[in-house]
Amino acid sequence: MVFEQLKQNNWLKSVNWILKRRKYGDLDATNLINRAQNTAKLESFGPFFNREAYTIYVNDLNESQTLHQFGRFALEKKILHHLIDSLKLQDLISRSSLPDTLNRVVLITGLWRTGTTYLQRELSKLPEFQSSLGWEVLYPLYPTQHRSMTRLQAFATIKLFNSTNPLFNIAHPVSFNQEEEDMPLFDLGFTSTINDVVNDLQHYSDCIEKLDLTEMYKAAKYMHQLHLSKKQKTKWFIIKSPHHMDQLLTLKKIYPELRIIRIIRDEESSMESLFNLVYHGWRTFHHSLNKDQLKNRWLRKVIHLSKQYTKAKEELDDDHFIEIRYEDLMNNFGKSMHYIGRRLDVNIDPLKNYPIQKRKKLHSKQKLSLEDFNISASEIRSLFNPYAIDTFPIEELITNV
Image (cartoon, rainbow, N blue to C red; front, side, top):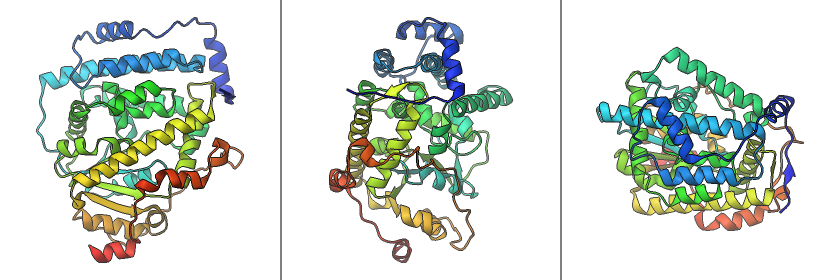
């Protein structure tokens, strides 16, 4: 298997040079738990904490041959932080219940690189919608802690991440004070699949797909309600992630009035952009990767999610699903917002001048094609053809509401 060396910026090179002086052994799953318990002065993890997934996660990291010094250092700190917060969350849940008022939830989902973040942030600007901010999902227990200090910690964490890997920040900006996906909450149960984006976690990824995550979704709902206790109540609460497509039936049990907005984009464009995202994300913690390994794992992962979405559509009523085309979202955003509003019983003006999405793009020399990953557009279309979704142009959708 051929591994390609990944370029590091000067900042990351310097940090790795400094950390070379430190000797690291394997991560010890039991020792990390003991350290977390001693730090938090708590003993009990909740039912949402999956010890099997946690152990496999640590073992996968230990088996990786590509972690650089900063990657090894940062991941140990990250795991310890999540273990401590997991203990604190269970203690909070055991001591205080929250009123179950969070039922009207909108999930924005789709394959990666389909405009889900853009739609989440634009909907959240309207008074009828609300969503969690970047710093809130990184430090979800902030209502029980010093708010200013927590915001400062979150800002420093995001700044460090962006400095370590500026290319990933261009491909997928991680924002401190804007809406972000809620999947980092699942790190407290060690059942978050976003870890796969920047790490070699094949066994962990396989394990997560087989788990019943009902308890973790209940814990995530508790954290959302904790956040909302400090905010003004709105009509709809937004969660967002492609990863949730694996658990739509579980989500429906947790949120009875769930609505699912799925953005449809051609798979070849989506997968090419996703491959670039993972390729550039990898250098945050790793010094090298194998492109075929990356391609095969993520093809299997995305096909699995497509199957799960198809299964959910067969079992849930059509009223739960709002499907719109990526092209309409990018080129006819006002009407797309109007259609979504009509489906959610919210009046959204189609003639409002919404801001055009502007962000930095990867330079042509930094952007890889499907051919760089030894796969063609026709092969991608063939693989996803059984799960293809046809939807009407936005004008027809509005007419048919």
